[in-house]
Image (cartoon, rainbow, N blue to C red; front, side, top):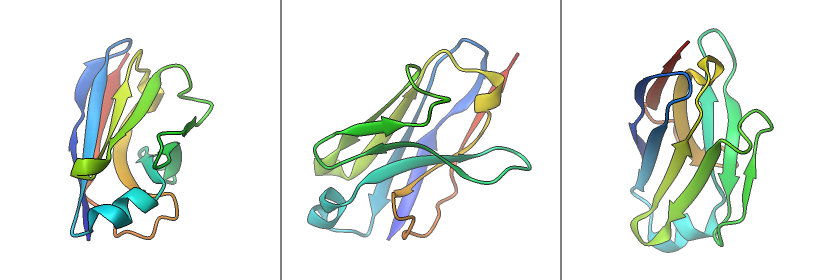
Length: 116
């Protein structure tokens, strides 16, 4: 079982980016039964929770990204996405997906760089 993140990139403050994640090696019913989450790790900081989404697409967000980020999931394809709008320099970091329990191995992540 392995999350594979993609997307991200570099953008100026105020811009938008999208990151995606596919969880390979898990059957669809197992994926669907788990709350999925996006985490991020800024340089020199601990990994933090950004957003979660349940099987039925109920969502929660960190206060720092509310109103700017949108998490979504595609259960049939075992994917989740994070649409990031009005990006700020403090959103810079590597973005990872995992279960909300963090029990999957961590993937390589997707780099997001926001310049001022």
